Image 1 (cartoon, one colour):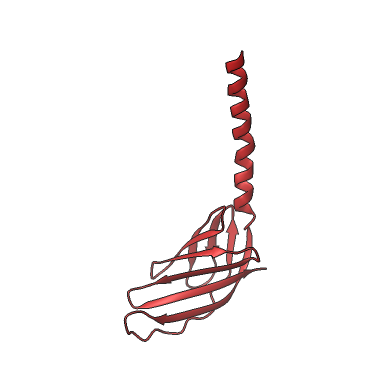
Image 2 (spheres, rainbow, N blue to C red; image 1 turned 60 degrees about the vertical axis):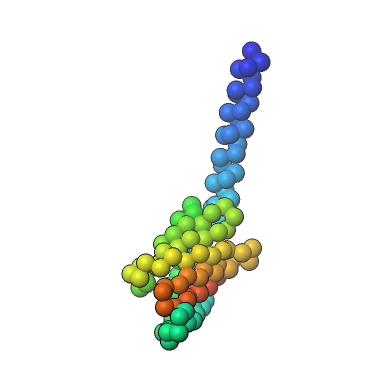
Length: 120
């Protein structure tokens, strides 16, 4: 009987923990407007200026942009962001802070790039 009670208590605890972790990812859900884009040299190459990025939408931890130069990726419960940009297939790592600002940076073998979005 005691063993059955412990098992049901563990199952209850896990059931409560699952929605809490899902909520922590969904707190980032929404649309983020592109604010700025910057580029810098990596290896002595003159890099082109980059515009502010297209807006992105976050839903259940998945990130998707619209428009040219698509970003796709994920956001974790801690706000850590991993994005991939097509067509150049550059990985961007970043963070969403407590004010709703998302920043991400990445580099090719020639240039470094950084982008900023702000939650609407």
